Length: 324
Image (cartoon, helix red, strand yellow):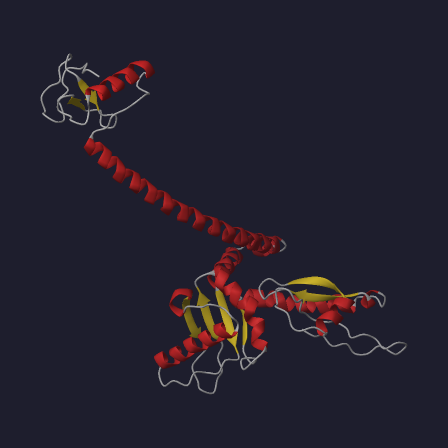
């Protein structure tokens, strides 16, 4: 515990600590103090520190000065706060990773379609449209559209906005969704030019995808009560609407090509929530069950066109109507 170098001032009295004076080194700042200048270090403590240092090659007991101990406590508190903030950042990163994976799938689908049209892909205009579509879908990912709601009757924009906020609260309460206008909603706006004769859709931007999913999942509850004329749907791009329209046409084509034996067993449908729809082959019995049961949420209940109506036994072919 004695000083070995040329100039080691005591952190208490500031005088140089000589080789033969009893002294102790702070394990944090590496400064020295006379044994006599540090009242908390007794002779017994000094001997224990000296013995531990000789026996364990500086890996045994250590002593830190009061100022270093106080600083270390504040430093540890800062580290703890940083760890908490880091945990929150990691949580957000996990959420972003999920969104990136969904976007990656969209990119793969769009790239596959682009590869089928090599001449178009070669043009910069097509490449730009692909990335524009990706950005558009990303911007809409937390949006919902409300149809069937009466146009607000307020005389000015703020009054009409307040009416729409009240409508959102009423819808959320009706479908048992806990919704805070300030905390959960990023924006809401009517689409199109204002006119009291029009009934414009209401576009609502939510701050989280989970809240949007909850609104869509519970929207089936609107079928009961005084809000049955209102529907809550996913906000999709023009390209997605075209894709779904093409799916319906494809379903009609596929069903028209079914053999008489096949159409007794299954039919093709467009199933899934808007923006996530796909063509599926559904057993005929499943069709009957769906028509005889109460409406289910779009995520669980397949919806889509029937290309044909069942033939009458022994009768001629009848005109088949597509139902969407």
